[in-house]
Length: 523
Image (cartoon, rainbow, N blue to C red; front, side, top):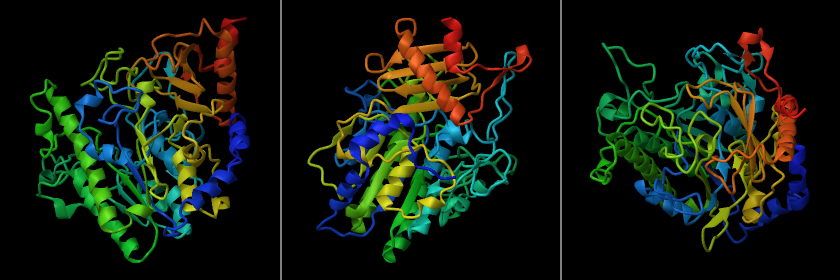
């Protein structure tokens, strides 16, 4: 059953804004301009960290920001709302499912990569029963989250819907392995795999061995085989060709431009690699920075194309990443505060800030900005779902079968300085991912964040305003705050029927809820 009913802790925000008022205001800004429904672009980058850009998303420019050249992100920022407290999930598939369905990972239960390799054995923690087959628009598919996809709703509202790039909504032989099942009219270079075999056109975006093509070879790009066209550019070119069709027909479009970049393999784009050589960076970091600038060039190509077609003044752009930056893979194994995500702690595949904080930009050219605006409200990737539907003025939301956790961000754009500190965000990662930070969930309310480590059965409390690096655990200092958050945490996990690991050494004893851990320690 579909519901846009927010959580109890969001009701204060509804009362403040009355919801309808800001949406009316939003519609009114188009007066004197073309009143056609806007085109919508979601520009999603894979594995891009919060600081992997020359655009700072903190209150200061970091050392990491200075390593990158992203002039087109700077150009977009000058015309956009910059969300400085934006989050995704710790891993890619959970984030993509949240974006396309509006559901939190603790509800859709796609909490890891779809069809991953067998988990590393552990004597204490058993594997969780999760939705290994991802999202499905068809009911009754085992281990899937049955949902109505965002593009399907938009298509029913007259939008032409395009995906160019990474899908990763479900594994092979499931409906969502073909993103068209979720409502895309056209899906290019997409499928069930999480990374490309190669970024190089000369290698046909493949890594064939002994004449056999890789399972991760990127399809649909045969015309670029044998060329020097980098994968990021090829996907962009195909996306622009695709949207030219609805533009010619005076039809609004939804473009989900989902880059494989900057995911592994870390392969240098020769067009940009010289910008980073001779600067004291390790070779792998030189290659990575060129991947980032290549992605940024894609953004520039897109923006230029929209201007060339005279539709830039009626096209909304949402730019974001699917999880935090990589710091736990072999090339960046440091978990300390000095890792490549510093000042944030850790990185991808953890619920620490380094694993979930992302860059997030929102441009609606119908609203003329005299200067860039910073939105302080903390938001999560599932909010894109409700935001896009509001922008499109979608009328058939009663056809949505899932409960939607994401909320529209338009009220916060109306008042960028306002922060609803009663809102609760939740991250759920009940899996072992090769690091000590695995088997964890986290909750944020206001400036406070509580992390629950299932393996150690420990609650850790951090004040993100004073300690964005999560170095000072305040659980012992503020027990009442721990209790408050642990209770809200537990209620959400139960209400969403979240899946938990089990403790093998104790005959599959259930892992306790956060509030049970608190009460046991404080009885």
